[in-house]
Length: 492
Image 1: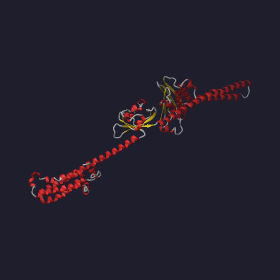
Image 2 (image 1 turned 60 degrees about the horizontal axis):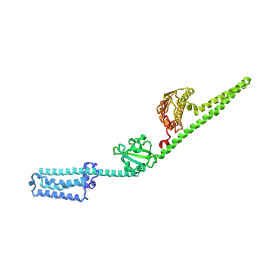
Image 3 (image 1 turned 90 degrees about the vertical axis):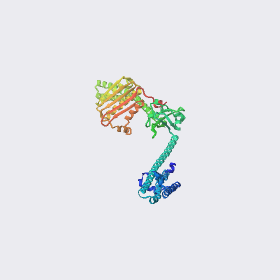
Image 4 (image 1 turned 180 degrees about the vertical axis):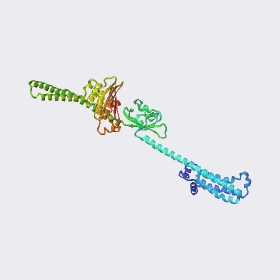
């Protein structure tokens, strides 16, 4: 007996109907097209004929305590019909047993005997309903299980097809990071056969030395540089997802982001070159202003001073005008000298970062009237020129923002020299800004914060800005003692 043959008579939706309705449906739709059903009904006729013969010829008393055997023989066709046809077959067969037994009740039994025979028939009917219903339940459950199994096999086949034909490298690993399966793209990526990849660990394939543990990845990870079997360098981005219904198994998709990374490196290199060229141009202009323009103005100031002294001896009337011209020339010279210091302060190259930032703090306090101070911690020493310049420009921009925009009353600058890193912290008690506004600065053309972050990144450091609308701002720039290598060199 197969599930396929039984499932024709058991409908999952029918099992949800009320019991009376199920019985009525079973009586209305017996399996009349199946020859075995009619063979079962023929067996009912034979049992009924044998029962009537026993009753008619007076053999029933000779059975003694086995008097119930003729009636109980109806269990055979009823159970058979239930096993092969479910509720529809068992109810129809039980109904036929009941109808065909009625003459026997009326002709051969009276009183309590008649009640006993009818009770036996009701037991047969009850067994028919119970067994038929249970068979329908089992058939339906097995049919649903087969359908689910077929759907799962189809799903697995579709997944396998996508897995094998995917253009992206895909690895399947267990909870310990051991590779259990891989597709053809993964074999091409690592230049190794699938049998060689299986059993390897994600750490050995992707390189735990780069600070990455892909077995713990729950989402996309930073790009990782690997060297393929042919010697080519490839940047990949692992994206790990847990496989449903597969406890502990993870699928790791390896996206090839080499071109994207190269463009990003190009932009970073370009930004670094732009900053370097800008600083070189500032240095050149400052040098020219100091060596040419300022010196010419100083010479003019001295000549006017000499001329004013001679005129004073001759007591000419244009002495006040000469003195005014001398003062004007001196003011211009001092102004140009200030511009030159702003473009490229000589004190940074000559004395180092700490004196240069101290001058910024003192100038801010003298110019704006706000309270400003500098605290130095650690071993004050010279850093790499690029690092000193980056921290100086960050401090310069931060103090300028505090003066122009924050409405702060006080600013505190802390310069901390560590063993390997230097940390610049600038705090003010101004109005601050909401975090959401920080993300809008670049879009609105306010590039001061973006420029500070870029300067820190170029030398391999980080810059963090913490502020809220309730007031106050804290800027933390953390950079290494020596500038980091350019991206292109780090990838080689």
